[in-house]
Image 1 (tube, rainbow, N blue to C red):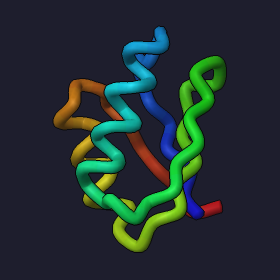
Image 2: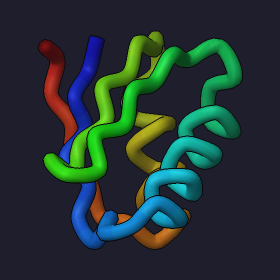
Image 3: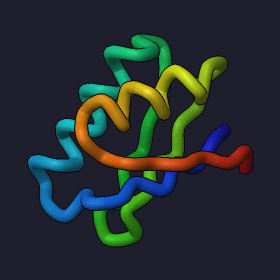
Image 4: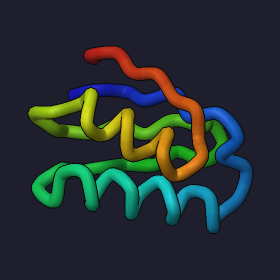
Length: 66
Protein backbone atom coordinates (compact mmCIF):
# COMPACT_ATOMS: atom_id res chain seq x y z
CA UNK A 1 0.00 0.00 0.00
CA UNK A 2 1.24 3.46 -0.90
CA UNK A 3 0.11 6.92 0.15
CA UNK A 4 0.34 9.66 -2.42
CA UNK A 5 0.40 13.30 -1.32
CA UNK A 6 -1.28 15.26 -4.09
CA UNK A 7 -0.86 19.01 -4.45
CA UNK A 8 -3.57 21.24 -5.94
CA UNK A 9 -6.34 18.63 -5.48
CA UNK A 10 -9.02 21.02 -4.20
CA UNK A 11 -12.41 19.77 -5.42
CA UNK A 12 -14.43 16.73 -6.38
CA UNK A 13 -13.54 17.14 -10.05
CA UNK A 14 -9.84 17.11 -9.11
CA UNK A 15 -10.32 13.93 -7.10
CA UNK A 16 -12.12 12.28 -10.03
CA UNK A 17 -9.31 13.27 -12.37
CA UNK A 18 -6.72 11.79 -10.01
CA UNK A 19 -8.75 8.59 -9.66
CA UNK A 20 -8.99 8.23 -13.46
CA UNK A 21 -5.23 8.79 -13.77
CA UNK A 22 -4.60 6.04 -11.20
CA UNK A 23 -6.90 3.59 -12.99
CA UNK A 24 -5.34 4.43 -16.36
CA UNK A 25 -1.84 3.75 -15.02
CA UNK A 26 -2.88 0.53 -13.24
CA UNK A 27 -6.36 -0.84 -13.96
CA UNK A 28 -5.89 -3.38 -11.15
CA UNK A 29 -5.10 -0.70 -8.53
CA UNK A 30 -7.38 -0.16 -5.57
CA UNK A 31 -7.53 3.52 -4.61
CA UNK A 32 -9.06 5.54 -1.80
CA UNK A 33 -9.00 9.31 -2.33
CA UNK A 34 -9.14 11.69 0.65
CA UNK A 35 -9.88 15.13 -0.73
CA UNK A 36 -9.63 16.91 2.64
CA UNK A 37 -6.16 15.48 3.32
CA UNK A 38 -5.15 15.72 -0.35
CA UNK A 39 -3.98 12.12 -0.34
CA UNK A 40 -4.70 8.86 -2.09
CA UNK A 41 -4.05 5.45 -0.61
CA UNK A 42 -3.35 3.01 -3.41
CA UNK A 43 -2.73 -0.72 -3.50
CA UNK A 44 -0.49 -1.20 -6.55
CA UNK A 45 2.60 -2.98 -7.78
CA UNK A 46 3.88 0.06 -9.70
CA UNK A 47 3.69 3.25 -7.61
CA UNK A 48 6.12 5.13 -9.86
CA UNK A 49 3.81 4.70 -12.87
CA UNK A 50 0.88 5.96 -10.83
CA UNK A 51 2.87 8.95 -9.58
CA UNK A 52 3.81 9.80 -13.17
CA UNK A 53 0.17 9.54 -14.29
CA UNK A 54 -1.03 11.79 -11.46
CA UNK A 55 1.61 14.38 -12.36
CA UNK A 56 0.74 14.18 -16.07
CA UNK A 57 -2.87 14.91 -15.06
CA UNK A 58 -1.59 18.19 -13.59
CA UNK A 59 -1.18 17.36 -9.91
CA UNK A 60 2.34 17.34 -8.46
CA UNK A 61 2.64 14.39 -6.13
CA UNK A 62 4.95 12.25 -4.07
CA UNK A 63 4.45 8.86 -2.51
CA UNK A 64 5.63 6.63 0.29
CA UNK A 65 4.98 3.06 1.25
CA UNK A 66 2.69 2.60 4.25
